[in-house]
Image (tube, rainbow, N blue to C red; front, side, top):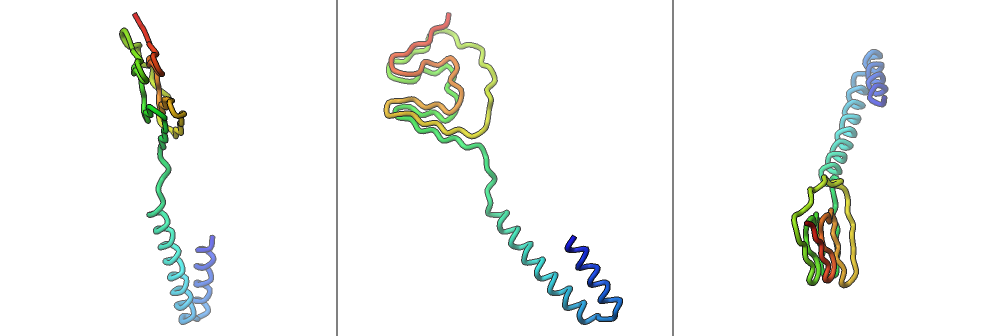
Length: 123
């Protein structure tokens, strides 16, 4: 809308025969718009797009991704065949934290044995 008003104003100045003034106004408007464009491009260049963030903090074990079929922890065991893995929810932001002796998993932990002396058995 502003560009339309500036263009209309310059056209009126040209019709009225004020070529010098129209030239000066066009130069100033062009310089201001160039400066604005430069600022916008610099801001866009240094701005980072938000992406999936995985922040996992664990006491004894920390896994940022999936732990399907894993044995995590002291004397943990997985016995038998793994089950059919269902598709996970995927992506997104994850922020997981566990205590001093805890286990933190930022993804799926299907078919896993988690914790001290834990056991997952399938036949």
